Length: 97
Image (cartoon, rainbow, N blue to C red):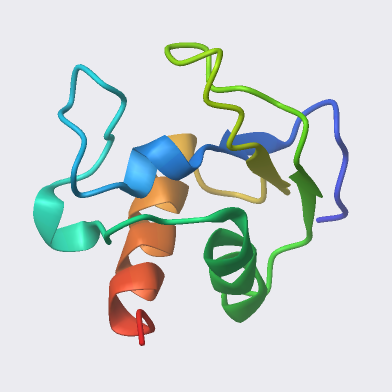
């Protein structure tokens, strides 16, 4: 499936940060999270998973509007957002070094 920005899934670094609580935006168990995730490693995980993506530096996570970490938008594909986030988390943990 080709990348379409209108239906792309947004991946925020906060989803994968082991230091955050669920209330602060972490979406996965700590075993699938890494310390200080950034846009580069999330984009690399999307590339490893063979997904088309776009890095947006100017975006802010809604729960932390002043942080300004940016986000990565990836193609929707045939899986739901929850499954995609889990796959990206597994890839991040596997390739964290």
